[in-house]
Image 1 (cartoon, rainbow, N blue to C red):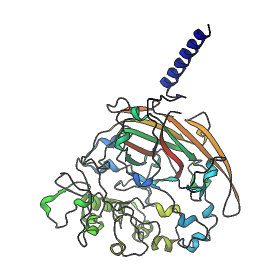
Image 2 (image 1 turned 90 degrees about the vertical axis):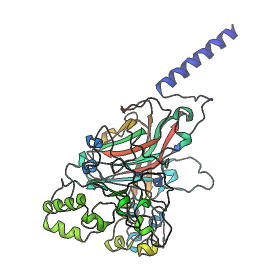
Image 3 (image 1 turned 45 degrees about the vertical axis):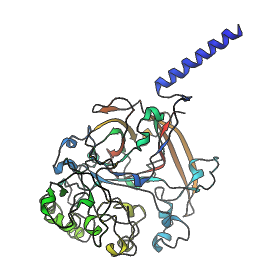
Image 4 (image 1 turned 60 degrees about the horizontal axis):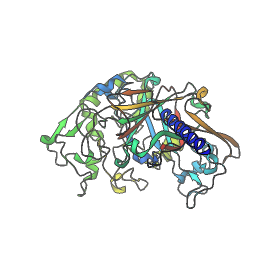
Length: 473
């Protein structure tokens, strides 16, 4: 009798596990499936996203500047502790003395025990979490956006229709999520509505695309790569597009700059293949500037002439700016504002002498290229599972909107105050996608991730303590 009962219990347990697995919320993992966690929190692994298919009809356009017309400015970064450490010798004095700024919820240091109270810190790990930050500016144009639907002050109209996004490849060893046991998107996110002055309380949406996403950021069917810039000015090797200039030959390349003297400054010019001076005379940018000038107020135009990041100094909007530079010091930028252009591709790989600044540091040492997984081909497919997360004040509740946990912490801030910081854990089962775009089936070949924000009317900062693709628990 005992043996029969044992067998029945075992069969019941197998049934429970099978049921949990079907629902995407398995409690006990299959021991035959290796457990892999993919960390997505390193900002250097992400690049400017292509226009997402499905939500934005212009994603179907090619060699047409309207392809980028709704791209707003999105910055992705971690905050260098040179700004936030006590007694930092590298931070400008006005930042060191701005205790309110150092207490700002989206710029201040985040302690490990703020998110994980009671958890023992691993040996050798920092007690400060280097968060991944996404700062979305829906009223400011993103790179290669030539839309003139702006107000007299130069801000984009219809900000809730705009989007800003990033994308990255999945390591080739882990693209088969079924074999790797990947079942969830999981992250800890700081409450995005802690600053009432941002006027973002209407909220918006955060989207994830998993599968195949186009690498063709400046969509024209050609692979743009900075080191393909024509050092000898040979027009026969240049192909003109609405975005700028690409190499006429898309042959296999070694992704490295020419190391001859003076070569990098000629090649590190962004994905459009044009220097700023060339952009002024290129038809697409020249037409854009002429039309933009007719929309702006006189005072806005004059102010833009003095702004190094305005279209009248950087027509494509792709210039790189290191977060510690003299212009930001002179203008007394707050910490977050210093990262607005840190992801630019034009001028992000220079030497200090080429940049003519001792404060300059590279954003990356390799050329920017549309082949983001370095397989020597340009992926143009849009086939993915899409996940939508509501970022609204009334959606931030455990048990709703994929929120599975909440952690509140009383934070003693640098200005002597106390701040209640609320962190939310999101756990999104991969089999609960909102929709499929294109002919994708199953999770055996997930080569890319794209994240984008849209639907927001005001500036919004998303601060991630973690961002991972995880196995079942």
